Image 1: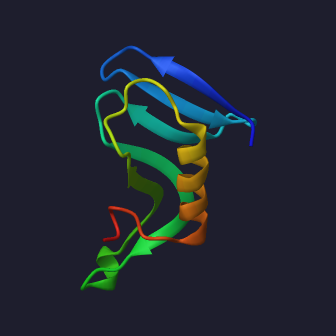
Image 2: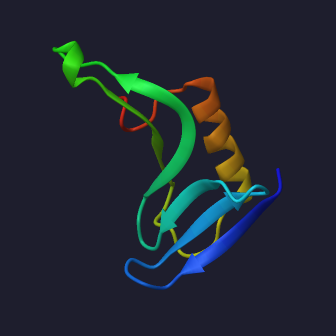
Image 3: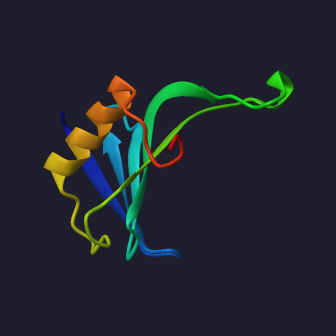
Length: 92
């Protein structure tokens, strides 16, 4: 997978990862253990069906706080987990 990484220095400082069509795949915020990732749409059930929430944001955790270097192996595994529907921190 071909990716590009853009550094953002405005608050909060972070790295944004895009695919070859410039679709955002991930946002990694400096100092954070969590990463916001794209993935397939999913719906979180509610007690009342009118209160179900549908979205395509997935959140996974890093083994240590993000320090500015995107680990492409970790990123590929995380995106693959999303596509496989493996639960993330929002689903657990």
